Image (cartoon, rainbow over all chains, first blue to last red; front, side, top):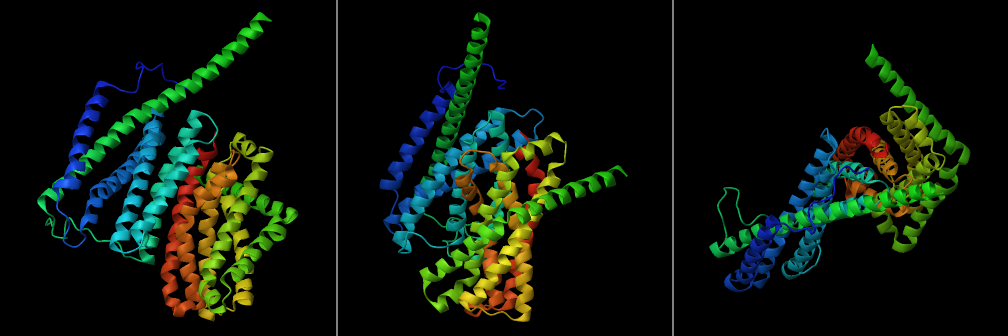
Length: 250
Length: 234
């Protein structure tokens, strides 16, 4: 049985989400204009370097989202009070993470076609990323399995924690297998920045902008999940009440 | 004293579940009559598709493990279908049995069935693909089969328990399992290729991959023992 009381909000928006939303629009507008117009083309990569302003932040957000999913799942499992709020944050974060992971793979493939001449290479980081995507698609499928909300929460929390075990093993085995990915170009091992100032600022603006998008989406999505859970539960309660009334009238 | 009693009870439960699963297989003969022919057919179909003796020798290791993984799905689904159709798992839970012992019993039974399957598949590779193996290569091959099937047994049982009794389990199980078993496919294939000497691979190269298989089995053995109870305890 669900333990939440009826939500106090009539929509999923609040003052905080509106502020985050406005900030997101401002930062993302700057990233689009700067990335497409103000920043120069790269000496080696040419215009294709502009893909980086989407690719790098979306990869960062995808990994952040999956970390949030794992942490929220751990809180759900190990906390004394198994709060379904953690489950909803985990689910919302995984959904957003899958979306950004798809963006990462698509933009990475486009960049690879321009730079390597092929859409796909069996490089460890690419392969691990693809496996990560499939793993979290599976996680989302588990969330849609039939059963109670508590069953959903427990199953998906366990799967999310198992994914934490799985990811290093997949990555390690694939790294053993082969390697090709572009090495980190922003920071060298000494920590020295090797990038044009405006390009770097635009890239970090992209990271900030995408993080705001992530936060905004999570806030709304976990609230729509709460409303959906409550709607399902109230439907069940209404059906039980109707049956009880039938038996009383008979 | 109490700890020893718990351990003994756990061992007895694991052993009972292990014997029960193997007895069901011995009576129904699904693995021998259906899964083995299916895996053998996969090996033959690969030969049709690739149609080149040199290529088949080169990729024999990968084909053996792909056939094993495809067969794993069938064995796992059948094993849990039996347990859920007459609510056997529910009965075990009601009896207050330690579910990690159930997990271990089922996983070891599954691993044993996979070992039997692999013996036949490797024999088929000798016959159909003309692979060869030295005595030292055979030691590597046996170790690889034991480690890989143990790992597959653990993850197969864990995810089989998760999808047991749910709608759409036939499609969900491969979706969940394939990414997880990717390290086993890669490592077991490379170790088997080293044992066969495919593509000039040295036998010594195979032991690092066997190490990875052992780590995989250990991680999912421990993780599965902890997670199996919460997954099916509903």
